[in-house]
Image (cartoon, rainbow, N blue to C red):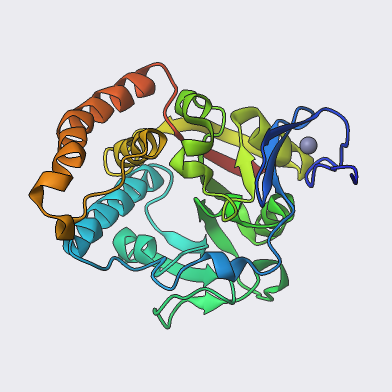
Length: 289
Ligand SMILES: [Zn+2]
């Protein structure tokens, strides 16, 4: 078998296999990051057409929850700045920028194969993107774990910052308690769409490698997102699928019971996780050194 090399630190020793499948998950004990190997040849095959859309029976509810999550993001973002030029890398339909409001001038980027409908979103490979613009802030909202070279992405982002500008990275915490307990059932593993799996220390290591200074590194409490992911992960671990109204009431009883008991439980668990600093969602704010 060919030697597995960590794509971040190029180390080949100290690498543990965490999970095997069509795409293996490895963890590098040198730089403390997880990575998928091999990378999919064509990543767009793994993004369904509806990846950015909320369709189906509960679409309205899902849209509301999604927007509310973006408001939460805008809330922590505004603690750092109240206006400015923002670049959202991996913006999806650009909802975060819309919610930020008119004081911000937001440029949205997505990768060339992204199935987004918003015409204002520029579809381009960020590393090849040529621009003379500079930004007050560049955000990667759960997008950095999707790219093939996160260190290069951060380096490029640093080169596009105005003086005193910030880089924000929101990411699933691979080292969090629920990730460790749920293992391959943890929804945020999302292999092979998540090519990298960052720990606190791992992301710090990457920032250091590209000469970025850490302003803050913290966890995020999200009632709109984390409890749902935890419930879905536990459901997957127990082999309980989502509600299927076509099956009729009787067959849905075990699923309904799971939802009735599980939903309040995961909310309580997420509050506990937050207070013991084990929330599954992390945020790191970076600046040029
Ligand atoms: Zn490494």
